[in-house]
Structure formats: structure tokens, C-alpha cells
Image 1 (cartoon, rainbow, N blue to C red):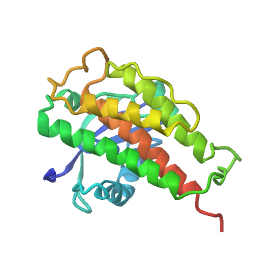
Image 2: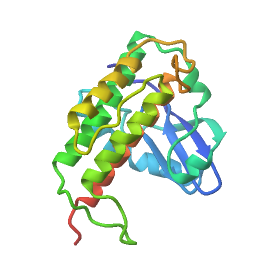
Image 3: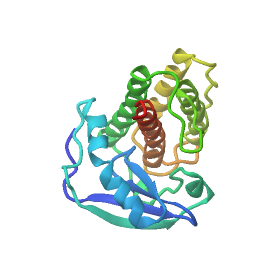
Length: 223
């Protein structure tokens, strides 16, 4: 995969309580903050971690210390405030050729691989958050698998809800999603769905990576 040259192009969506900064050419690299400035700081801080995640699949990453260039700003939604990047930017409507489609699908697969690796390397019981909350490992994995059924509908798929611990069903759903993302498209919503392929890849990869990093962080024993 060729490295995308130049500054990292970023889209920012900002709602009342939260903003997301998303690297538009790097599915999965999206971070949140209270406002644009803090979201951009979080994106910069996570650059090395994102590079490590995608390097595991032999993919190039943005150069270390690459500039972030905000090229689009859009109002966020209630989902943005809730904690997920929910806005498709103008850049997400660009046509997807065969090379783009292969790259997008590879990055989504890499995010899933990172989640699987984090789960395999972490005890089932995770440290609780500051208020005693938070899912344990298996509940996080199940949550991601369930969300992918809903994501599938957004790209024209009717996927079956995996049963608890049904890794085979989860893999089958993911292969169906990847088959859609591997198709070239005109940049509009995927046939039968409502999301364009570029946004779908970004949202799906973000969700997997965000929870992979949560598992890693909460799996470290407290000092």
C-alpha cells in the first residue's frame, strides 16, 4: 500500500458536549475531545498507536509527526455527543476505485485484528473506570460484534446477530462487510444502505480500534 503524501487531512464534527477529529484517509484513526482543539490533541497523541495497529498488517502509516490539516468542519449530532463519529464529510463522497476499496477493506480488517489480539492477550476481568463502571472483555467483544450487525444494514446487508461467544458467526459477518467494502463505488451510499463506503470503513474501523485500545488500557493491572 502506498503512503498518502502530505498533511493528514482531518474532518471535525462538533456537537454541544463533544467533538471528533477523524483522519479522512485513515479509517479507524478518529478521536474525541470536549471541543475541536482537544479532539485534535487526542488524534495527535494516538498517532503512534494507530501506526502500530496498522503496521501489524504490513500497511504504511502517516509519517511520524505529520501535520494535521482540518479540511472540513461539520455540525455533530446527538450520536457525536454520545461518543461516536456520526458525520459523513464531503470527502467521504469521493469515488472508490479498486485500489481504494482494497485499502479501505484492509484497514478495517486490521482494526478487527487489533481487537482480536487485544482480547486474546487480556484477562477476562478488566479494571473498572473511575466510577466503577465499564464492561469486561467478553462483553466488549460481544458489543462490537452486535454493533456490526447494525452497521451492516447501513451498507445493504442483513446479518445475523451472533450468539454469545460465537466467533464463527462474527467472522462470517465481517467477511460479508469486507466483501461490500472491496467493491469499487461512485462514492454515494452503498446500494441498499445509507452510508458511503468511505464513511462505513471509518466508522467500523474506529469502533473496533476504540474498543481494542479500551481493552488494552483497562487490562493493565492498577499500580
